[in-house]
Length: 159
Image (cartoon, rainbow, N blue to C red; front, side, top):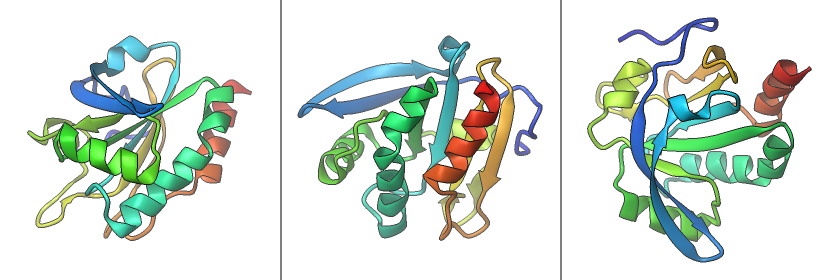
């Protein structure tokens, strides 16, 4: 599928995910359509505990309180299983949900599949109305938008 354009409805999905808070792992189902009314940041990343992915998600973790203040939630999405996500979350002190797209269906729905690489490092800001409000899709995956860049996009939605 093609990458959803800014102004288009975000493809909805339900994925298994987990979160580690205060040392406790909690598994749940994450349904994008249940987040209508909130801004959701979807951060697609190629792999748990890899150098660039760790730098990216740790930078978002550092800004998490700022995202919360704006009423936004952050979900990390990659093809690894929940146990891999747990190890990554614990090792990097990540406290936001990491979702497991082992079948690659959401990666396909968002058009961020990259042959040979798995997926393109990508970030989508989904507005409270379920519409894609901003996106950054990497070609190679070595660069990622900063937390400050994403925060500025979220601030435009709440202004």
